[in-house]
Length: 336
Ligand code: AHG
Ligand code: MN
Ligand code: MN
Image 1 (cartoon, rainbow, N blue to C red):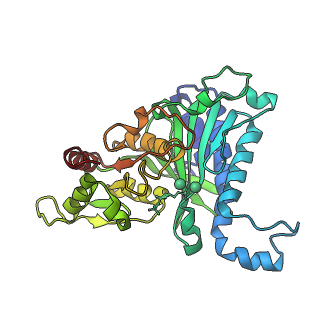
Image 2 (image 1 turned 45 degrees about the horizontal axis):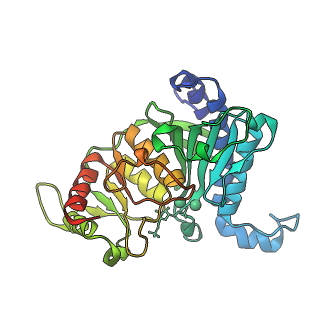
Image 3 (image 1 turned 30 degrees about the vertical axis):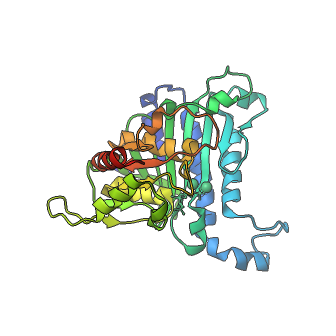
């Protein structure tokens, strides 16, 4: 098997790249990897839930079938909690952050923020979904319970971030400060292999991703940028291609590989945008910067925003550097 690097081997080899090389991050990533495998198994048979539920095959204890995003939340929470390296978790599925009470977890040096299942409206229609995670060093003293300040740190302070995409194949993509690496899952043996080393987003691209159904509600700068993408111009290869899956993870993953821009702007319906800063935008912004792209709220770098609330929303412009800069130009001139 020489020549193939597994995720486990990669993490051990690269442990010293991580600024706090003490082994805890390796354990944490290993917990995320395990939870991803369990969620992947359930996602793969999502269409069978009703059938298996009715026959009782899956549900011998008589428990009602859970929605997959609640299931994913519980799996990640439990996998992380039992390792004891994390003192608290903030999740899209939990109103408040969870500060673990046990002594071992209180010694944990990290906090985790997570969107356990991203794009969950796509589950029923067999379209790619994902998990997004973000890891910080705590700011409160070791040995105490996690505090709000541990969770409300600027994105730039992340020490690791990543996502899992449950797509035509399942991949885990993450960064710990030294570039972005992608691992593809081989379900026959339950192993993630390094398939996309040192991922870089093309500096320019020809794909724009935005929910154009909301066009009438968008600010003028965004409307003008969309029209720019649709204009004919041979020199810049326009019109561009429009691609919007409705799963941030899947739209981001495609643009990371092929080049492109993803925009979730402010609108009359959603004055702060829709996406959440702490467990959707920050981890994606951390990844895109390390892959050579940029992420902003239309003006400011996402990673410099000082969070005030666990579930706060922000507009997001993310992707190939030149495309995001061009979108900024329109926002600046016409408003966004
Ligand atoms: P989640 O499933 O975690 O709530 O996230 C859904 C998000 C994101 O994945 C996606 O890009 C966006 O919502 C789509 O929103 P619209 O349907 O408004 O375009
Ligand atoms: Mn989401
Ligand atoms: Mn979600």
